[in-house]
Image (cartoon, rainbow, N blue to C red; front, top):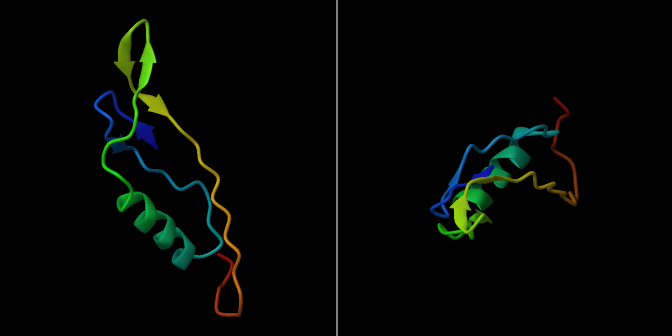
Length: 67
């Protein structure tokens, strides 16, 4: 995702997920996160910054399928 200069989030991209249920949960968490993040700064100006955040799940039980 990208933190824009105004602190908003954009450009969500899920790189891989073993199941749609997990992908949907990652999307839900990011959509419910605070709307204003701290933007990057370069030469005293706020700039957009790209982030890659690994997300790990600990899943108990059955019901997930590898895609």
